[in-house]
Image (cartoon, rainbow, N blue to C red; front, side, top):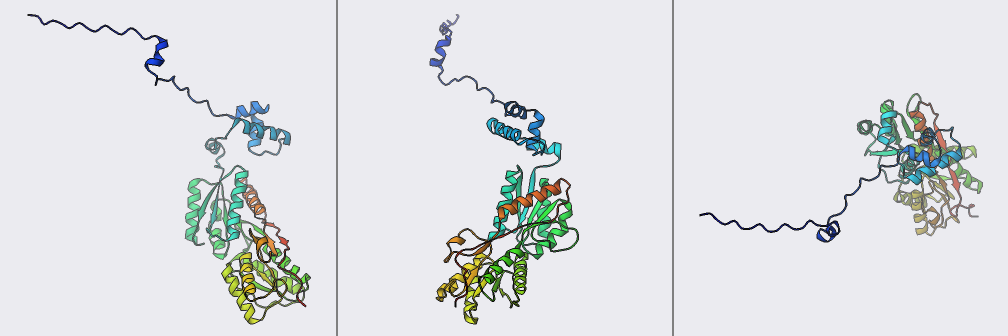
Length: 367
């Protein structure tokens, strides 16, 4: 006996295209692949120049007219073009990256120098890799340099503050182009140096006080193993001697306001001079605190001059006369010297001139 077979249900009628949206509302048309990124040829077309001209502008070639250069730069911005740094590195054997070694100090000078170098590098289309060393020792410098060599950096800037840094840098400067931020302190071959002229800045500070009528200037000095501190001591001594004044011993200190305060208390105990030149603005801040606490008027009883022109120096009480370091220019010159070395040049040591900023903490001696 055969088993009856159930009839198949009738097939649904084929859906019309007009019904698809209603039947399957979640279905969307396929997403098209994104457009290719803008190329150098797109920049050339927008600017109305050749591919070679765009390349010259990107490589900062001096033969491009300023009007043409600006037209290409405008086209780069309009198209959103970004150069392929990986491909460029394969062709030129350069990565466009520079290394910066720093001690990680929170002091105003080293921090401002690092920021200035980073800004200058960015403006020049370079990348920056930073290595921080806790101590300026040969082993720490070796590890930092190996780190940079592994990255393939084109050159290195060392923000070196003191003697140990100089020794460490000289040991390893031959492996890659190196620029050291600091005065040239050792004869013979070594890293190129770029520095603010600490010596000239100190002389300007002392000359200002002598011109006001002071017959002597006490110096509260920074740490003796710091290169900048020693240059400021030399400037203070030489400017006094040029005026026929034999300098006494400088008061040793570190770079902190606390140290300046202690120096101020010592001056109050030993006999107050009419003028004090502090090795940095933080020391000057401590001096002002000690003098104000003792009821000593600045500049009525004693004039105070600092060094650095830190942010806020104009708002010290009273506003501080100080020596301004142009860190932006320092960063630009560091990068220029390094790029010259990378290109096979032989640049000389470079210095940036500081500037005296006269405010209300200095005046003629009382009486």
